[in-house]
Length: 199
Image (cartoon, rainbow, N blue to C red; front, side, top):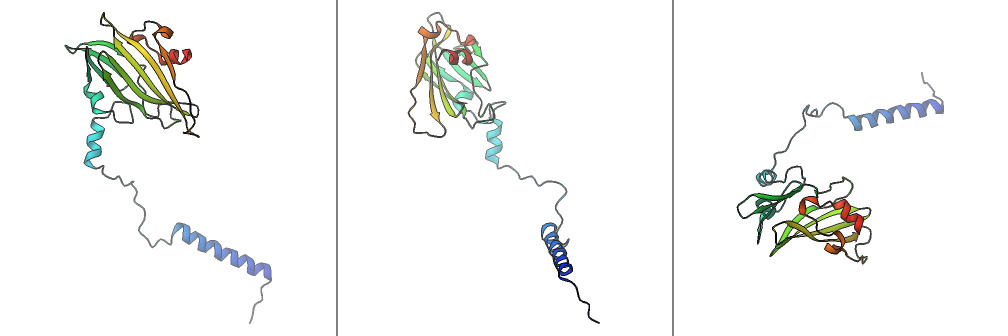
């Protein structure tokens, strides 16, 4: 005996068969090996393990070795550790500290900036080179200190160079501040927000 289905019934049956086929494709037929109950963790290569041991605390980027060990200058040593900038005398005693200058990589979480890069030393002067972000700009900061005759470490110059993230070739003039702008400012009193307010 033949059974005749109306067109809507045949279409409904086709849809059900298609749904079953899609379910098998998505979820499998149970004939493959089940997924492990615990995530698989890959072992880090030895060079990455070593690199992590010398990473600056609380920073996702690795500091240059010179900054970790301390960069010598005429009056002593400059050292960066995490967010701390330390100046040591020739005997190894800390004579100046500032924990508000050093930038961490992508500090705001909204821009892939490099943070602290390096310390450049020349005679009685040393410069912190680092990068941050401001709006749609990468901002390279150059913070130069000098050893005053009385031994105090003071700010000598503050410069920024902006790069437009949407148009890197755009020419943006460098901005500078000197002692005529901020006066005599010991290292421990330097606040970047105040310097930006003077630009």
